[in-house]
Image (cartoon, rainbow, N blue to C red; front, side, top):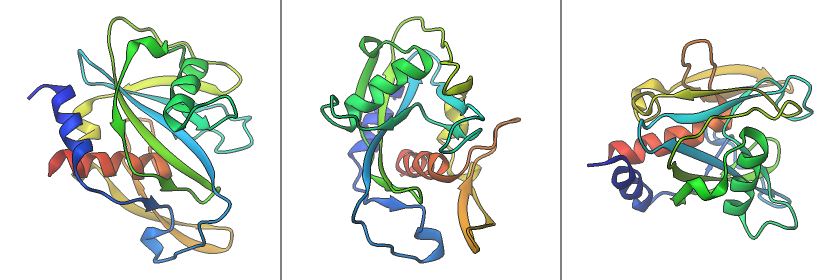
Length: 193
């Protein structure tokens, strides 16, 4: 089965929303969440996934590994439009090169976002260009790493006075964790089903 067909079949599987709070058995109120879209863009020819290391001077999630994306702005039609716009701004990915295959269920973050993962394929040549104000580095992770549920495990740390559990999927020098790892793990589980 080719990559596009595998991803499309995975996206068709039934799955509910997730939350940064799930592993700790917490169920915070869902009111007041801000909508956001992130782009899980895989190269059609190699299957590699584009990820970023956020700039260390950012107010939210500085230095963390992330999928390109951000909050839905007033000019965005929805989370998909936001993810495509942000990927263009952050890594120079032209929206016309992305074949959108579908969306993952919303993931609630501890920072108050309802984050929708948009899954797509990048067609044609593309050389990422990091937007210096937001992105410190752009790198790629092989599909085999992202798609393997065994690569994801749980770690814990103290955050705002409480112990919090979260998924991680380290890749070389990159510590993929938190909401990014949780969204990618959800996709990996669907791919493995």
